[in-house]
Length: 219
Image (cartoon, rainbow, N blue to C red; front, top):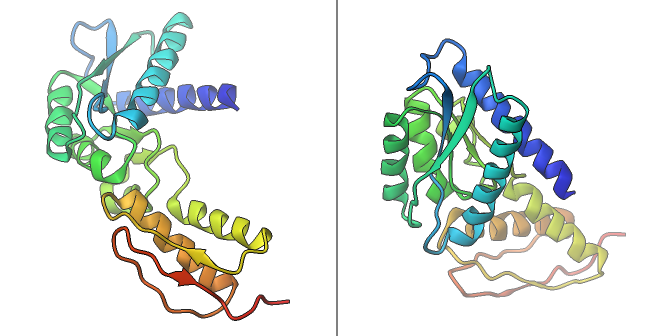
């Protein structure tokens, strides 16, 4: 599984660079293509972004050993976004000004969105390694912005299906409204639960929960 993910990451990086390189001016110095990473190495987002940065560096090293892209070596440059959305947008602009031809954005819509918006403005491909909000896509961010993750709609539905398979008839949903990821998971789990089981009324506030108890399971 890790090997497959590594190969997929390499493929995505190559694709993004080929797309942005078409018709683009040569990178500064002419011998390297810069990839800008606006990933968080400090703060609450760091545990998600640090592994992504390491994986991206492995992918870049592997590509360079095989001759690079379009006859040029890749250079990965990361600037710490410090788990701050405003800083993320500013960092993306800085990386673009430094000649980045593609942007790797943080693994969350709230933190990664600003970087992808700046990439879109510059006509560059932006990729988030793991942002899973349905908002992370062309409709909200632009036609050159992508995520490698499945959406929270799938995660919520999978969790509801698992609960049903265990024979559980009551679910407690605790929603943390800090970021879109946690809000989406609770919302889509509840929707899938209601769709599969029965009609029920429930809505959660931050760190508050109530039982979701369907009257009976369908045959």
